[in-house]
Image (cartoon, rainbow, N blue to C red; front, side):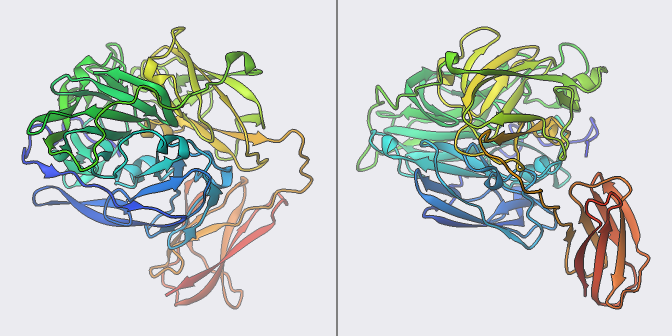
Length: 571
């Protein structure tokens, strides 16, 4: 839904200055995790209750702590009124466990992937990834953090007391108007840290670790501290750096993570604010003063006072040190050992461009990757298992895009021919591709191959992703021969049981000319109202029928799958 440009909106930096304590999500440990994706509410503003989504609660979700080398099972139960998925963003897992748009979780069902944790110690996250539904469900609040630990990280003198000196920070910007969360608007003026407006947190006077995740739909944050004191970046998306990198500013695009060390020793009684210095962002990045190089701009963008302005993310007050404080920044961390460019045997190009060349379309999209929009039935790339590849991402749009690749971590080779920033020399799964610019990354596809289940690559500006700025790739084992025919997927039907006779049917691999029938227990045909609402999805209205059992059939005239059926219960 697009919001009228002139709509009234609340500016987080001007309304209700009262601060609230930072929420620290519950930490779950072990080898089996239960997540309930459910509806909830939150009072972002006094007296204004807003509908939200969350895992195991009204908003966001618990932090999952995983140990490298362990086998974990994650049980995700969908209590939402719509289908969903849950993607383990950044984790190196088999494609059937990745939680992409093919791994649908129907309402009132549970998905239980199980896999070995192969990733280095780092900060990852999880969120819905249904095609066309990601922005809505993430904006409603469905997201959580994942911490992976390993022996190399454990051997370092680093803060790791969760919630005390090791702080999860999910940073977001939302548009909240007229009591609801709005999508696809430049009026995302409500700034949240772990779901809290105007958040504050007391930190001990010692070295503290901030695990920063940009969980916003579109906005980039330019991280800095109000007193301009330096901090040290020790890790990025997929692992620790070889050595800390000292900065006073770093840009964090949607989907990216960074682990920062703040040395607060000797600062007891002082206050420091983590801010976004958006006034320093170059034009073209969403959150900067302008996108579009003087052409049309995003809907409502020029009315949002946050764009191109500096604003607070969270306020820290410094208290007494803990009983066993970390008081110094380590000089070295974990050797990165990046992939050698000479080892690459394949170079692929992903070309980003608008679908249409009008002024608005150049800024808002939809955007294509290699001249194609996302199609669930199309595999865009096939990658041999074990190959080392360079992916060259060419941006022919006036908007910066954070491009995320599932399955792997990569190293950034260069951006517009120049070496990446020192903090970008480690492991990444999201890369900033500047307007009209080119980025090259190098990676290797190991461990998992599947001739049918794909991984995704896409823009992590969620409006762009949902509008089709996404593609699919298979990793295949060239030494494996699959002689079995793929099975025809069943149809999905929900809600089932239904109380009002209104149900939705989804038929994967839909073939034009297929049709739907509904019969009762005696085989008698009914005459429901049927409306196609997407390429492979229909809404069926069974008005006035008596409670009982019915059969819904999807009849495909191609002969490949003559009839697919599902039982429907009405109450």
